[in-house]
Image (cartoon, rainbow, N blue to C red; front, side, top):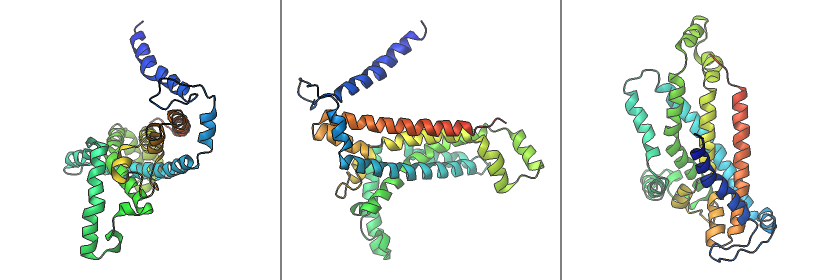
Length: 279
């Protein structure tokens, strides 16, 4: 009985919308018409033959790979540095976490101004060719601009989780390792990294799920341009459902994205847990 309110809430906000969304993939609903005609699995066939969708999906996978890798490496290193008793470490922790407090829309507009105006002025003033034109006008540079902004936003958040992992680590184990001669990289590889696996699993899961679903930064920073070369899959699904008014197809594509995120997350969590150790 104590779990009933939570169960009812879960069914209402998760289970019912999920199955209703699946039902919509079997219709030709355009988002406005009150009539929904049953079309079977034709929306899934359309999705499988939609080359633009799979191109966006592949671009998203590359974006997720580089974003998640850089976020977790930087966050881990920052957390390691800021748990060694350096002076002013709490100030640095707050400073690195601050970008996470800024909404993705505002963040996108700020960095759009930086990439299009500030860096261009800097490049022309100093003669550095890398910055003489807007990064957002070049497909490759615009892709990396998306990665940089995502890393800048999420690194501080993941850093706090890693800091919690470092501060909860047993000092007795670290002291015993030092007495046994484990120092430097050997201490990091054989002692610290295995003990930090739970934090790594959590951070990788969070950064994976957020990177796969990113829409606000994509919309405000590049708007999918230039020439739709940076349109990530979440933006593609939104455009299909609400701009092209093909809600059933968009919902089917969203289901493919959900399955991909679920499979990748489950594999990542299972691999991480298999490497967990106890102090």
